[in-house]
Image (cartoon, rainbow, N blue to C red):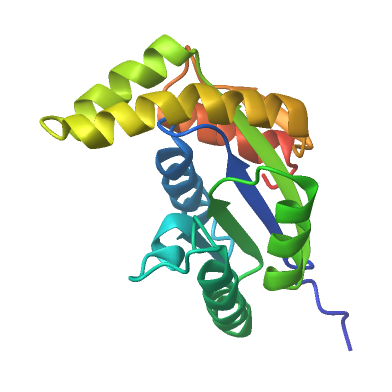
Length: 179
């Protein structure tokens, strides 16, 4: 009998400040993995935390996110996914550890970097006439960038300033040794 050639499942979190392109790069990674016929799944962690009301002591509804991540990751893995691509923010080693525990498999972290003026342009486009939302995200982008500089939770960093989304996704996949 031949040994099972199926690779060990692995997860990769794309982190970075708001507006840096985490979700876009994760979606492009999913498309590249599908083209390479690698069983995979892509999850935007913001969607797993969205519920109301949010507990007062849990500003970003992380408890709900982790509960949902356990279930969804488990379902994808049970269905045969060998690569889980997550788009979200890990502000600390504790966040990273919680995500890894929730997915139940090895987790690598890639920090996506884009110059803040470019992030601000993206946010202005994304928020249109939502002035309050834009103001919050503009303030949060610099604050979160500094938090991530200090926390250093990433295994590697990819510069997304001069490349297309697809080229950036390919760079992440190659650096992670997934392709």
